[in-house]
Figure (tube, helix red, strand yellow):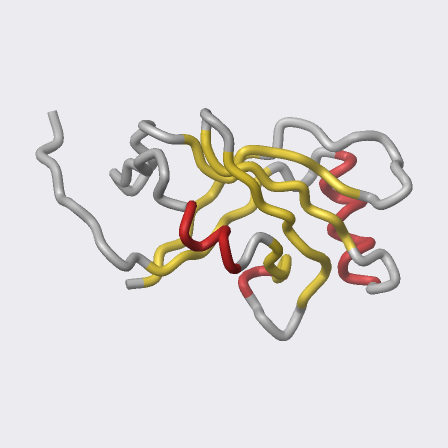
Length: 120
């Protein structure tokens, strides 16, 4: 099953050499808007083989505008996302984020295993 998740980008640094932002893509133990809770360690196996993934505009794999460099810490999954500013769509997206017109993005993933829990 493929899932998409949205998270809010709290800030974009002023112009940097590589035009990037850093954020938590997912945090452990929190219930998201779909009722999913990510358990600590759920990203570990994937990151062993794929710590850099494409940044796709609107989830379109034909519109790669940069890359996400992923890592985990005690809080959750972090991304350092770098835009390819030689691509006009990437430049436009970066500029819109910087001015606050775009303040969120979503991640997609495939679920290999899950354990349903009762909502309380």
